[in-house]
Length: 218
Image (cartoon, rainbow, N blue to C red; front, side, top):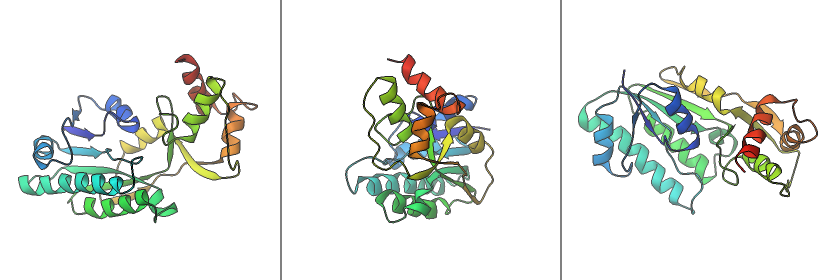
């Protein structure tokens, strides 16, 4: 079975790449249908992980809808029927009116136009190699602490669902066709995360591993 991955250079995609034997890695531009057709024709399964989430207003919608639309259009133009596994977000439920949440909801509808699909609604993902100051509060806090920088937490009572990257990859590899899977994370408030990285260090193994990672790359 030939398994393709879009977004394999990103955080989640890079771990998925390592978990799959000889994956087909998308090398082109997802907004160009010719590039997408060249990729799709060789795949039995496609993990669609690619997508922008931190760009100027309007660009998330513009880029992601074209990319995901091209993926489905390419399968129809070539009359192929790969299984498409889509990385959506819990923001479709928790923050659906944001540009990112709205975009993911529309992308889900596009993905369902495939004959064989699975959608994962993913919470906050953390782990080694995640970018600080991008989209992971864990990575940001761990980086700051590892580099003796001041950590500013506006509201330590804010609670979110967190999932460790390896746990997420394990779930992604066990997808079920034609289902929306709402990934369950570990509920923690930001204050708790900070404590597990400081005064309670060692009481949460996975968070401790992330801090150690940033300490070792200084």
